[in-house]
Length: 257
Image 1 (cartoon, rainbow, N blue to C red):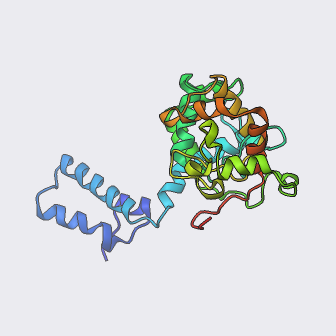
Image 2: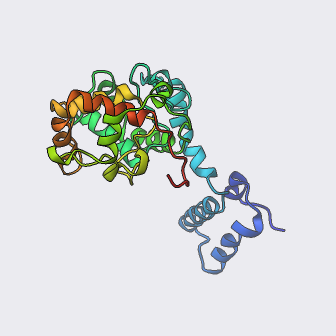
């Protein structure tokens, strides 16, 4: 067996796989200094492709996990301080759960907080500290986490909420308010990357977002839907909808609601 090249040793790959490139390179005249550089690049690319599923992704994702857990030396505070060690949020004070939300949705919210499209006195300054890569990595990190499988408002689950259930499931067409589930999915399980899950989200957080849309403090969202709907909801309806969805259990990935 041939001696492993430096690239093979670095990636701990069998010489019979990666070093075949070295053998081929000699046959096609890549023995020069430039040629050896090309071969090294070919070897590295092949070695990366041969890594076990997720191995390289885990290596790249470690900084995001560290920022989420402990913050960074550059002054980014730990996400877990408000959003919990498992991304479950803190429903009692309105800090939303992040675990299991779509990555593109989370990244979009961080981008809007950073560029001023969306304003929040606590999150906007933090989002401005994040690079584009940081936002992508953190969004992917939280999207990969399982959503908590218990509702955030167990007390609300025990109380029938006729107003919230009516708006959530059937809407109020007399006022031009569609059912929430028509966009956010059955039981608020979420639809794609645009309409996030509402099930199990903090009731206070949901109410605060409805208020922000109602009074123009948050961008209206796709097709301007949410600002229009929020302005048509009474305070009682907004509270009812928030409590209804907070009492629903999130749907685990891969499950049908």
